[in-house]
Picture: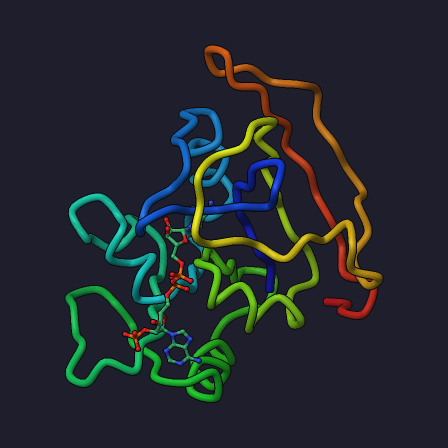
Length: 166
Ligand SMILES: NC(=O)c1ccc[n+]([C@@H]2O[C@H](COP(=O)([O-])OP(=O)(O)OC[C@H]3O[C@@H](n4cnc5c(N)ncnc54)[C@H](OP(=O)(O)O)[C@@H]3O)[C@@H](O)[C@H]2O)c1
């Protein structure tokens, strides 16, 4: 299982149910990594998707405890246990945890890799990703060149979890 996320300099990821910024190249990267794969997200993140529609050409799994929550083309899981039963149907390397904060916090210990787009800016925020640079188990293994979107600078990075091998 892998995590994929875009963070600012404070490891912030969202504000008021939305992304901090949409960088087209980052959205393309996200799509290229997750297409044909399984994406796991919290109910809040699902509801932030354009048109509240599942991501196309991916197996969408949404975690929620909200009663009777259903939607076409979604698999609903009501607990982490139920999620792991569902994920047993898929190769673990095909599973991407796509947020938000509450879901990353619960599933990060099971992730072998994290694809982190680091935006070199700070934003007002209310949701965060754990700071992997301060976590012993996680090691930075790849950093891209500096990229630009207007005045915004960012880099694609990859971390591996030394405790989780796939
Ligand atoms: N920058 C990025 O890459 C990125 C990626 C994704 C999301 N985000 C941002 O993150 C923010 C949302 O994060 P969030 O932490 O507020 O919400 P979230 O993690 O997306 O969703 C939280 C909800 O998921 C459900 N849930 C969580 N754990 C569960 C469990 N163990 N069993 C059953 N249901 C569970 C609950 O839904 P119920 O309340 O229905 O029970 C909970 O309220 C948004 O601003 C979004 O834009 C950013």
